[in-house]
Image 1: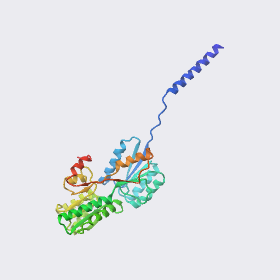
Image 2: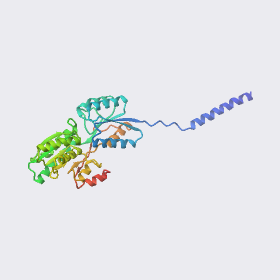
Image 3: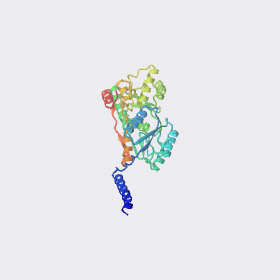
Amino acid sequence: MAKRLRPLLATAVLFTLLAACSSAQPAAQPTAERFLIGMSQANNAEPWRAAMNAQIAAAARKLPELEVRFADAAQNNATQVADVERFIEEGVDLLIISPNEATPLTNVVARAYDKGIPVIVLDRKVNGDKYTMWIGADNKLIGRRAGAYAAQWCKDQGRAPCNVIELRGLEGSTPATERGDGFREGIATNSAVKIIASQNADWIGDKAIPLAVAMLKVNPQVDVIYAHNDPMAEGALKAFQKLSADPSATLIIGIDALPTPDGGLKSVIDSRLDVTYVYPTGGQEAIEWAVKILEQKAQPPKEVILDTLEVVPANAADLLKSFGGE
């Protein structure tokens, strides 16, 4: 009997040892959760929007749990609607969108939001409130500051009347409306300042050149050119060159002030533009808030308004250095 028990006891001891060894192993760690973000861009051809994409990509690269897929609507509303619909079908965990125009993109953004996808709207807005949050600068304030600068410059230069040509952004985009309205509020402090011509160049420098040429031909006495972004302001300068005209007596105002070799900060330093305004892309902030929403289940504010700065020759070099430009 004792001989027959010996194998059974040995087997029992073996199982006991195996169980003990098994329980001593560290518990398997859960796999880190990953998140897919869809980024729908209105138009990659604009340098400012290319900078926005670059900042989003750079911020996301520091976070291995994030994957960002980019889509370029090439300034086409139907393309951007299709881009967002594809992101919805792919099951993105969060959508970032900078809409081409407000009204055409409102319904598809609302569709994503209604499906439970958090939506961060960057820069340009959509109608209604079916989105998680909006991040951008105060375009009306920027326009107002530009208008106030123009009004004071005209007074200081003794220009009365003081004639303004305006190169506007894409019609239907909220920044174009707000920058135009704000500028008009700003120049209202000086009754001598008048907008004598205004055209939409759709944020594109190359489109601004022929428009500015045509407006300068019809209106040879121009004191101020107000462009809704720096590339269009640069386009106005090229229009002067095409007409063999001297722009030195004309105040040229832009907006964006990118710290890139061809950006607005360098344009002021090189005396091509007289003044511009920093318009942050919000790319890094979008990723920071995406992490809070996805990983921390944070309830973000409905709006995050980014600061702006006025760039003139006296501070342009210091600002370029502070923003990492060369």
